[in-house]
Amino acid sequence: MAQQFPPPQQTQQQTRTALVLFLKGSATPVVLYFENPQAVYAELKQLMKSPNPVLVEKEPIGPVKKLCFVSTQIAGLILQEEPYVV
Image (cartoon, rainbow, N blue to C red; front, side, top):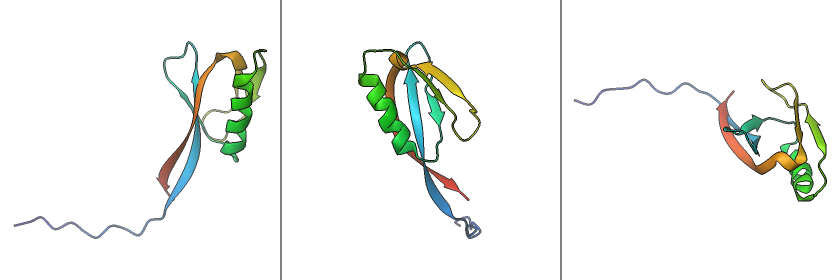
């Protein structure tokens, strides 16, 4: 006989966007949350194209309070959508 599971609780699932930053010399990527991650992504993408090193200082939302790095150390960027339960 099949096991009966209780009906799922009513939960709201939303999607948030995270900026994933890959830095040269770092073994793991850094996941950052911002109010407007698309704007930060566009800004960092422009800095990656510049041959001149620029000190970047960001204050994201979440567990990472402040992050500083040199723009020439950016190896890659991605935007990632994550589902989460409210």
